[in-house]
Image (cartoon, rainbow, N blue to C red; front, side):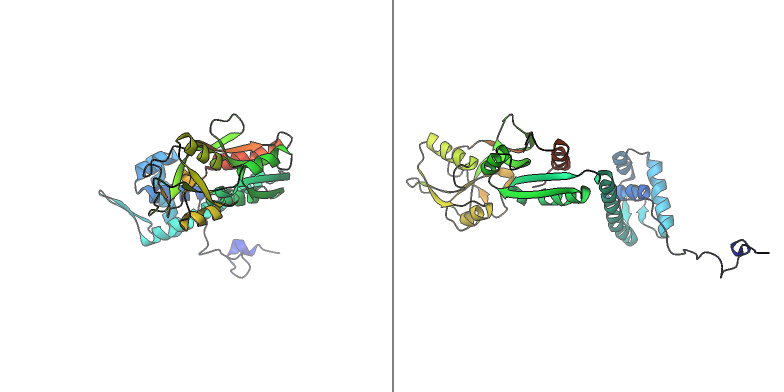
Length: 304
């Protein structure tokens, strides 16, 4: 009579043991990571919306699964052990991959084509990372990217050549959805010198350009003379010219590189005005697809 070897402890016939292999519960990892980042069980519980004993229990269960001490807690402090430091790194990776998988399978059903235009200086933000994650989340969407000047992209949008654009736009305009509000500033090298009797040397995009127009209007309203010392179509050219000392430029305050400085007050240059980083969509484009990218950009929040 055939017998089930597993019931009788036959090691040669039983399923192989999985000793040394264990799963880490994502819930336990999230609680542990909150404690690791705050070094405070009460603050971790508040961050997660849980009771403190629950967080403590999650950490204890994670330590049991890892068979290691991860956190040392006494009356004075909470600190990570060496194994706790290692687990924090693994926890971030595991949770990030899990979240990515959840986003992928939640959104993979959407299909279509999206012709997206972005102002070139916005590439210095977290926009490239957001676009990469968007493509991973919606692999069936054919994303076509065009990079250029804001006015040029807006014209192409109106001509039906683009579905959605992300541009620097006039502050307070009714068109589009604002991702961030900013203000323009005069930018130059720390050692910039502007003699009182000389025209202001201006590094700018070719016309039409919002920053160029606002800069010239501001100077002329103050009776200041100006001359364009460099005209370039790319932000890389603007930055190169300013870094070479060829002149000063007008830039959104949040996009100023660390090696350049705001010189507005130093030389009593006129205020230029505000700017909105705006998402404008083509009404004839696929609304569902366009709105998905708008949500990704506005929802994630651009980092500068």
